[in-house]
Length: 279
Image (cartoon, rainbow, N blue to C red; front, top):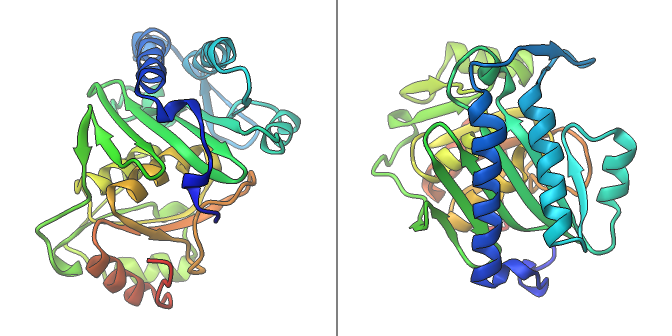
């Protein structure tokens, strides 16, 4: 990827950055949190769930962004395929929104879900935020400007030095049967979790709440903001082919990540991924 610092954007200014965060928090509380345990869900064509919170959060967020920063196109999880492709090809950049990441949790009353928003310019994620309404936690990151959790600097760290001491955040459902079986039979970590919100997974690795991460297939609205949070916090990631996770396309991507370099190297060795050169 191109050096992200070469792309200027309004959110390098603190006033615009704070305005964006405040707007998303207000919308998330009104359109998502207020509907928690209050709405039902319908099944989409791909088998995933959709609620009124998803559709209203996307609609209101798109309007908010268009009012204040109309220079950028908009791509949302609930946008049509044509709208997504048009936004991704924008010359000025585009917003990437997951209005409710963790809809399956949200729909059945599990308070682990989030709102994710990223700004992509020429294929580079230059700003991102992930808001957890249930815990009132806002994870933020700007390229070359670090990551924060509720306004305080976030640095990826953990006292755990070895993979066998770690908690792994693992999505088994989307892994190959061979890899899933290997993990089940010969677990390299101390314990395993799967929370159901990809955006939070990335942020929680950055915060050391899990130390290693694996997911077989996530879309750009799932990972864009969370990837930047982990990257700017000093964490490490690649895909199962040892390439960067981020690609400016609406395609599924695998993800391997860890809080520290030592754990990342040990985790990749277990997964049989060659040494990642870019760190």
